Length: 247
Image (cartoon, one colour):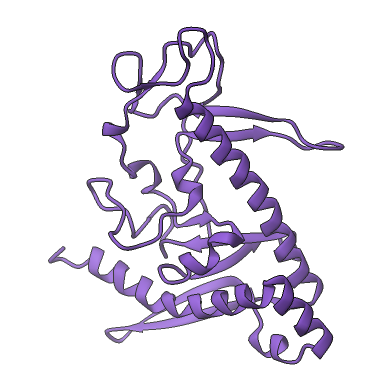
């Protein structure tokens, strides 16, 4: 699997440099996310997203892992964004996408990480002529920017929780790499190296561990993840329809 960073010119948001910047939501679309086949996902989104995408775990061999939604089977192709930049109607839009053009950057080190609010200066909806301002005349954050920062901070916290969820599964030995075969019109498509929960191992956990997972909510998330894998054939159908000569 691969994931594309769709921030072309991320820059730290600066009260002086970006004082007159405005966000024109009328120019918003999802073309910026059209060239990725996977998107990071918070565990709190897992149940909602499971109805739209196969949800898998991503990371280095042996971990650490986190969660991602598969939105395509080919590199640099999002099957849920059309040529006009519209997201597929009825499909869940991950927070990873909804936070754009803002993003938190930095962090790490000892203690609580310090994060910097950044914005993609390449976003077409940013200008100084039309839209909602990011700063008021005194240089203070407008409600729009304050809400965006709150969203970023909340998403960052949820991703830390997601990493911890994946670590608990990995510690229990539940995560494994698998390949899937999808047959379409006599052609075989192989999806390789997908890290998922081993359903057989999940079923053999001792009662105390199962009870702890149920009470923490991890078990519900695990089952939603396993059900989401039923979306892989539907993803193949989407790819076939997109590349059909009649499309």
